[in-house]
Every structure is written in C-alpha cells, then in structure tokens.
Image 1 (tube, helix red, strand yellow):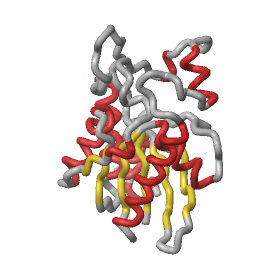
Image 2 (tube, rainbow, N blue to C red):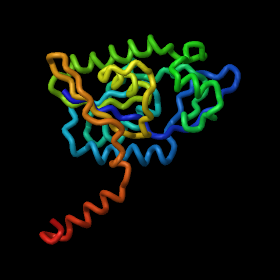
Image 3 (cartoon, rainbow, N blue to C red):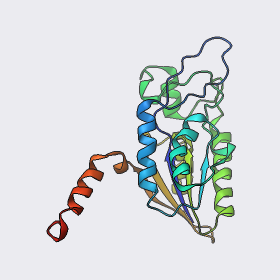
Image 4 (cartoon, rainbow, N blue to C red):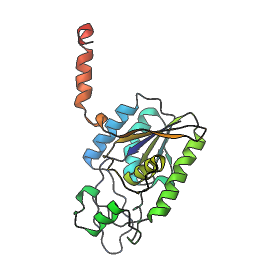
Length: 215
C-alpha cells in the first residue's frame, strides 16, 4: 500500500500566557492557500482514505482534499505532534538559533520540556499508529495529514535513522512510503514541494492549449 504523508501548512503563531491550555492554532491565510494546492495535486491520484492528526493545523490542511473527494477524514491520535500539550506554538523557523528549545529539537533531547512527549515514547507511538494504517488498508493509498516530527520519525524508522529529527519537511510538503504486505517498507520520495508552485499549473495549461506544436 502507499502512504502519502502531508505536513500541515503554515499555522498561526501562539504565545503562551500563564494558565493557558495547549495551543492548537489554525492555519494562516497562506496556509489555507497551500492546503488548496495540496488538494489540486492529490485530486488527480486515487486516494482511498484520509487520516489526520487531531490538531487543528493538520485537520484544516486536509479539509480541501476531503471535501473535493467526498471522503470523511479519520482522526488518528497517534499521528499528533510531540509538542501537542505545549501552551505555545512557535514555528521552528522562528525559534532563535541560540534558544534552548531550538537546540533541544535539533539534538532530540526534549525530554524535560513541559508539554512535549519524550522522544522514545513519541517514536514508539508514531510507528505503532502508522503501522496500524498499513494493516488496515492493504493495497490502498492513504493520505496522512500530520506534522514534521511524525514524518521525521516514521521515515527515519524505515531508513534506519536513529535521530528523531533529521530533515526539515516544508509546510504542505509530501513524502511517500510504499509498504508491502510481507513487511517490506520503502521511502519513495521525501519533501515534495513542486505542487506548491501554482505557476507550474499555468505553464502546463498554456502548453496544452498549443495543440500538436506544444507536444
């Protein structure tokens, strides 16, 4: 079966205040635009099922594809991000490079950060959740709307990479894994972003209108 991992699009930044509940930000305007580009791209593929993290940024990214295909997304708790209980949400690219939180993420040592699931537990829960999808949808193609940490951990599991975070998936990027019934797993692609360039759709349309000369 085929797994298409989609990292959520850009969410709103949330600054924590004392006593705040866990942050669950919506997408920005730019994030919603990218969610629609994901929909346009994947609508041409045969998607059998859509699953999404319980977090709002993942659910909102999945919404255009789900509506376009008429598929009700399934919320899977095990593909939520490791920081889901944090009362703030600061995009990784906005964290100062000299901040403790930045180095903790890069080095995979965030055990003591309040609201974050420790790396070992996070890896075990993520792998178990994704493997359950493989078992439930043999021979199918499943779009998995999730987070950077989940994509890192599962692809790292397939490739034998021990580090929790080893690459940076772009917002609304796609990464693909092929999973065989006999247990084999293979990474097909990592961090696809060409669907986020709408000018390519325009170019393709213009070329197609040129008849035989354009072929």
